[in-house]
Length: 153
Image (cartoon, rainbow, N blue to C red; front, top):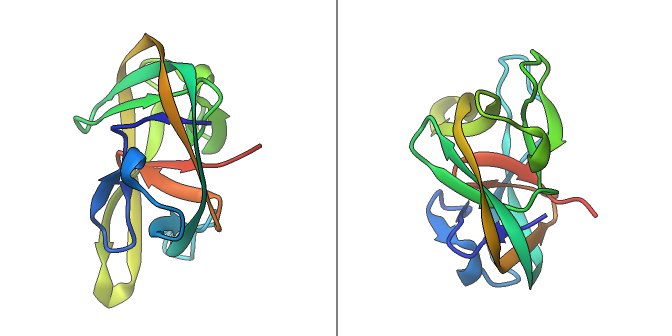
């Protein structure tokens, strides 16, 4: 349930910050797990309450929106795996090239519309062991390189 140090986490001010630079007590952008009547997934400010490091192997995804995400195989990500139409939490090792992930698209202040869209995994590869960072937040959800993730133990 971890990411490379250069993985960018969305902060509460909509600016991205590398996970290795986040401090406990900072506010990141979390989100609610349910959608509202307009199919929006409302955002929440979420306090960073835990951050640790260890060495682990990583999976690297090149995404259709140009982002590159490096994460451990047990990190949970919101998406559609195995060409399923159902949006669900899966660990990173389940996803394959062509599967889609829930990606933060933008914020619409007048309607408080916080939108997520699908992005595809264009290429999946393995990386050797390196230092990885585990972040936990009050909501257990946050956004890394535009992708919706959650913390589980």
